[in-house]
Length: 175
Figure 1: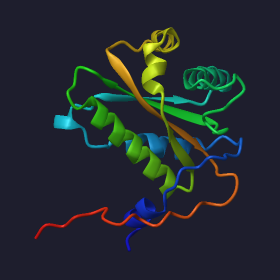
Figure 2 (figure 1 turned 180 degrees about the vertical axis):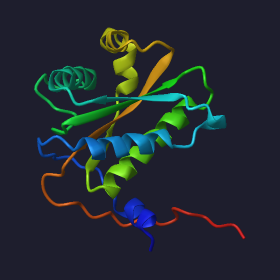
Figure 3 (figure 1 turned 90 degrees about the vertical axis):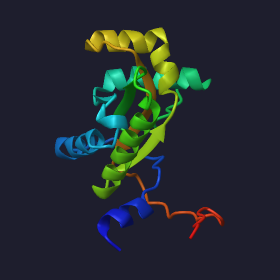
Figure 4 (figure 1 turned 90 degrees about the horizontal axis):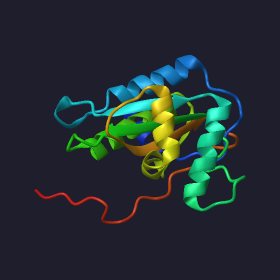
């Protein structure tokens, strides 16, 4: 089996991260992989915000936990030191798919580099809130963007999980 197929087969969500910051070279490779995701008509509707700053990550954690209805000390990002946020331009008809593919590329790129990752939801709600609007404004990001998701990244604390067996009737082949 080639390396790409092996990566796709072995990638699993990580729910326990070491606090150590990932290397810039690794982060940049993951981000670049996201920029090469297919997008509808090549419009490249998504943008990626990479948060390494501890204070901003903490604010994002609190907002995500609030939206989730959890206590203030809950960490929906499982301690990951880096949070990538994917948003996409709502004026492009394929924006949700485009952003989802960006996230998928980054999750798989992280796996290929031995970096743990997990897709975390509630980005839509975050960026519909005053918190998200203010964050984009503070970053000088203008446009009609919708939050698609987060990719939490870090070194795995513990053992990699094995894949669950694939369900029956997952694929139908019509000859």
